[in-house]
Image 1: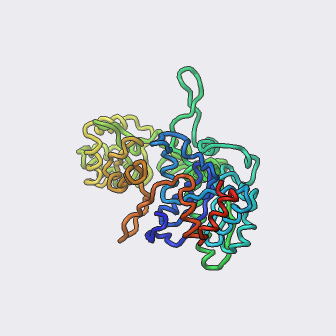
Image 2: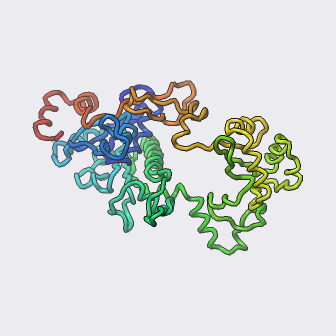
Image 3: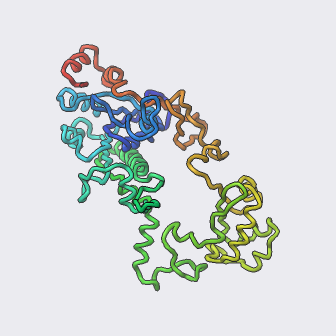
Length: 411
């Protein structure tokens, strides 16, 4: 949506220096209407060739992460290119360094240099392990942040070889999301006070923070059981942290339907009663009424067998409709492949078609009342907007642009 007058962040300009996935920080801003100018080395960000799938020569990661942005190439080894970068910063709200911390400082473009030309600039560095700590300079890719945070257990195949199991990526997406939030907070304060800010965050930190419930539970369990207990409905017995504590659940559990699976969540007595009445099994409620709240009927195998047989009598779609009709929580169970066919997904995520972006992509899930959704532009080729940015953003004339080109500023 670069250059458009639409979007909540119209009038916000961000300069991005990134490699690979961390560039997603500015993707959220671009999708909301910010003018994001990606400054690339002459050879371009090799994200275009990383991971799978590759769609007509470009990776899906590039097509998604850099949609709606403009690209300019600068060889920051050249002083003329550094001068152009500083000119970009003069009219910007924020600079995002999404690579190893200190990369821009090595080119004379650290926060102190940037604030000299723009005291209101917000500088955000997003890296793998952050700017401090023993892992600061450790090279890594996105999954490393999830294994560091304890999110991915080791798995073994039939031959005894350890392998990386399938899992949702956390740090590589949560880090940029938290970074976007922080940048917006910095811009808000800068516009109010005139004072810029320097901030840094790590994708590994974000992965751990998103799992705060489990991590903090383990920490709480280090205190005596007289101080930290389980729920009253579990006779105060401590459960394993997070979803591991759901394994023994019965009234809150996954069940087979006649054509797939559903998630049953009648842990409140009122929901459990509604369910039993609607399936004509009040005997189950009378025998096991449960507590008012948070009662999963742990380890009640007799009840679990009854529910297993009941849920096998209808399709998943029928159970979802049933839950809505009788007011008891029953949820769909999808996979990353099948979710696109789910009616809720189809309603909330109208695909941005490949004819527009080079791949079918999901829109940012932010809906503004009375406004049409943003329509981001296709991810740029390296340096695609160099001349446009020089002319329209910096006001350089043709002679100035040619002088810079001859000096090797663009590579």
